[in-house]
Length: 493
Image (cartoon, rainbow, N blue to C red):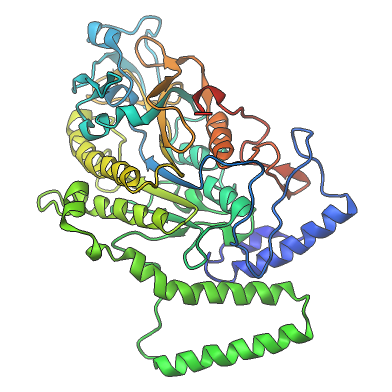
C-alpha cells in the first residue's frame, strides 16, 4: 500500500502532482479489482476521474450545482455570537445575575461569573428587521442577503482542534480541508491560477496554521496555496541571477525532452503530472502578480472596502485581502479561504477574537477590521453578478459564553451553541435557522452539527457528501466522517 503521508510536505505548485499520479494509479487498480472498500454510508462512492496531466481540469458534479465557487471567511479566535448576530433580550434583562442552573459552572479557563449583556446595542437591520449588533453595522446592512444559522455546535473548546474541526471535520491533524475536498472533486475553472487559495490574515496564520487548508491524505496537489495581498507566493519568481533568455531556453529544452519521453512511454502518468505541475507554475508566474495587483482598482472601490484607510492600517491590509479574494473568485478560482485573525501574538485577544479578559476593548479593535471590508466584499460580489454563482460562508471555530469569566471582563469558550452564516448561491435570504437558549448558551432548536454544515456546503456545490470519498488505510474516508445531513430548510430550491 502506497504511503501517502510522505507526500504531504510537497508544494501545491510543485511535485505533489507526482504523488497524485501514483495514488490515482493505485486507486484505479483497487477499483478494477473490487478491493476499494465501501462507502461508510453503504452507498457506492463516486470518485472523480482525474487526468494526472490535468489534475485541476474542471469536473462535473454529482448533480446540478447551485454554486460554482466557495468563499469562506474564517474568524479565528472564536467570535462571540452574543456580541454580533445572536440577539438575546433575556440576556439584557438579566444582566449581572447568575445564569440559572449554572452555579459554579467551570468552562475552558475556569469558573464563570454572572450573565453579561453585550457592550454593543442590537438594532433591527434591513427590511427583515434582523437584530444585529452595532459592533458590525456594515454587515448588519446586509441582513437581507444572509442566511443565519444560530444553532451550530462543535466538539471541542480548544482553538487549534476547533479550527481543525471547522476546516476539516476532524479535531486531529492530518485530515483534508473543505477546499481540498472541493478541488479534488471538481477541479477549477481557471487553469492559470491555483484551484484553491488560502488568504492568511495580515497578522499571520491561524493557530492550526496549514491544517486549515491542507490536503491531509488526499493527493498533495489539492492543498491550498497560501498568499495574501502583502505576501506573494513564495519562490514563484525567477531568481535575478538567472538570465531570462537562458531560463526560457532551458524550459523549452526540457519540454522537448519531456515530449520525446512521452512519445516513447505514453502511459507514464507520473511524467505527465510533473509536466502539468511545472506548466501551472510557469503560468502562475504571469497570472498571480496580475491578480494580486490591486493598484488597478478604482479609488471608489478602495474606499468602499476601506483599503485606503490612513488611520487603521490593519483594517486597510485586511481590506486588500478582501479585494484579492474577489479578484480570485472573479477569475474562477474554485475555493477561496479568507482569514480574519491570526495565532495570538502580543497577548491574549490582541491578534484574534479570543476575548477572555477585556472583551469590549479587544472587540472594539477587531470589529472595524472585519466589518467594512467584509461587507464591501459581499456587496462587490453582488454588484458584479458573482454572488449568483458563489457561496459565501462565514464561520468561526466555536462561540463564547453569555457570562463573563469570574474576575475578568471577557467571555470564555463555548462550543455548545454559536452562529455561522451563508450568503449567495443556493441559500434562502433573508432567513434565520435554529436558535440557542434564552441566553445564547446552548443550541436548542434545529441543532446544526459542523458535519451538517459541511454536508450542506458540498450539496450546494453539487456533491453528495456520503458518496464523495477517498480510500485511505482500509476505509472510505469523507469530509463528514460517518455523520451529517444536508440542511434542506435553508436551500433556496
